[in-house]
Amino acid sequence: MTFVLISPRQGQQVTAAEHRDFLAFTGLRAQELDHRILDRPDSQIGPVDGAEGVFIGGSPFTITDPEDPELQEAISQTLVRFVRQQLDRGELPIFATCFGAGLLAHYFGGKVSQRYAEAAGETQVELTAEAQGDPMCQGLPPSFPALCGHKDSVERLPTGATLLARSEHCPVQMYRMGTNVWVSQFHPELDAAAITARLKFYVGHGYMADGEEEKTYAAVAGVRTAEANTILRNFVDYARAR
Image 1 (cartoon, helix red, strand yellow):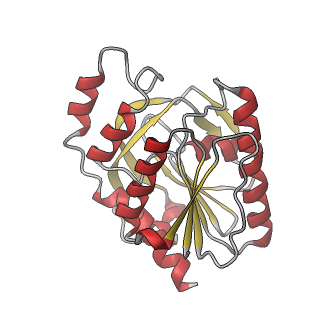
Image 2 (image 1 turned 180 degrees about the vertical axis):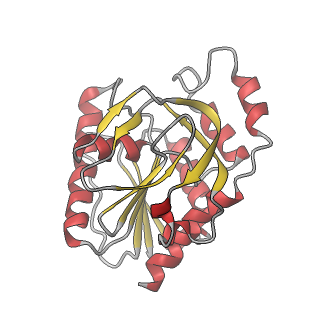
């Protein structure tokens, strides 16, 4: 084990697909990415001793409209306790995608709503001045396309967080907490094929308009995600160089 992927979602096939997606864009081998699945109220992350970094994957959970409040609250509290502990220590690097943006904003002093929700598809990410020199943004152009799909959105950052990226329709696309936690609203772990596969697990969950599924798949097919995917490799390089 050199890195850990935490998947706060249910379903063996979709969690396996998520693991493959992170392997593809981190450059890690299967034995280098330990997979921890949080799919029950009593699920635990387990020890991370010896891990160089931790990824927190996305989730169908939403802060604003939870489908299973008891399950979501239990898993959310497990994640929040873990992140708080690592923030206090300031050592273990963590990168969370999509659900993590709303989760950490909600529990760390920010504000979450559906005001800036984005349907599944392309978003144009724009780096802020604060992104200059940030290790996750190394080698990225000032603006680049990425894939997204979220019902929650961050209206106010967590207390003390630094905004790293925004987009025209969503003012918070990426931020940093402390010195060791990064969060993106968009999906750096997905390309066109991967988001199409992911969306097929969640038809009817509100990420695509009913009856518009094939149109959505066609629209994302040509999205170039190379720059966005670079962020995960940057995270691995940063964690290993510490």
